[in-house]
Image (cartoon, rainbow, N blue to C red; front, top):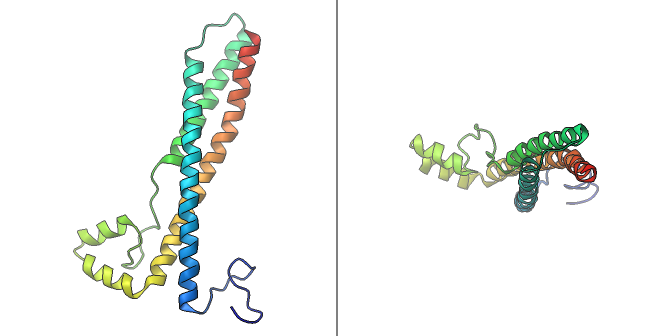
Length: 174
């Protein structure tokens, strides 16, 4: 980057003009996205264990003499079940960039699609001559995946708060 032209991450939205520098930025973004996807999967795995344990604990609970305890328990079961669904959505495998990459190979699905069309060799050649397009597509796809995973994780946490609070209420009423 030269002069007053801002680069990526500094408020500018123009890509670097140097092809090698642009590819390097895209590779770094891709590495960061893969790391974020891994962190999101780790968080979702921990939330899955917590949520399944909570649902199991709630469903094996005893009958209560207080209607309030029953209401709190079923509130906790409902919130935990919704949180479980959200965690599972975070863990589902995601697709990369949508179809339409003009023969660019960026994901395993692209390879399978090209192979079914008997165009794999041509797609490999095209991707090799246009690495920036492939990297752009991969960065876009992994960014979308990381965003979706983190959105479902946040939703799971929001749903677990009332579930845990209700569960504690049940314990206090017993």
